[in-house]
Image 1 (cartoon, rainbow over the protein chains, first blue to last red):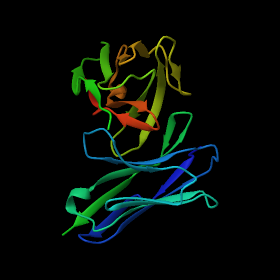
Image 2 (spheres, one colour):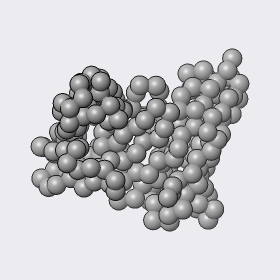
Image 3 (cartoon, rainbow over the protein chains, first blue to last red):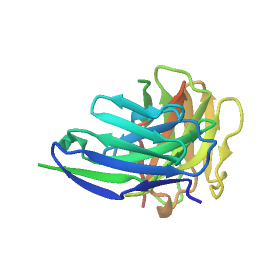
Image 4 (cartoon, each protein chain N blue to C red):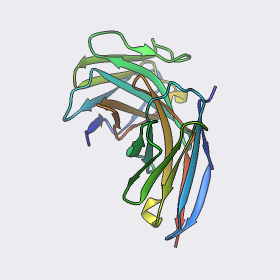
Length: 110
Length: 113
């Protein structure tokens, strides 16, 4: 049973545009929601994270929006750049264990 | 942020042999570490939780006798793939939590021929 659903599977955005990736979870016991960025052949790198008592968190060009009642959260990348082209994973944490979404392959085109 | 290292970064071995992968937390101590497996273009799948001073706990469907985990110290966990077969070829990644965050190693690419 997949506990974290992520969409879209792939996304193409023009340089300077906004990239939006969505995730939904089922288990209300999750207590922390990080996003990871992964380049080919590398380990995931923590991008930004949010706790469920906060509705939005912004760090530079990256923003997480969190809707606790809908059990959904999303990542917004403003002013998307070619260097942002990577695979993005949302995750949900319970007792230190992370459950990952299926990933979104983001491509930023000039 | 905290740094987690892995060694080796890639390894090729023959079918039937064993391979050991090391995971180290460089600037923090970790009583718990996690081992993941990632197939091409897929998500990370948790294999097991490594616990310092006690036995590892394995996720459902993971063979504990095939994937031996030892958490030797507060900064080192090892994963040994025993009697490796081509289907064990994958990208193995470890992680360690530091406060609320979890940090990942750079991964180890295992190819079994």
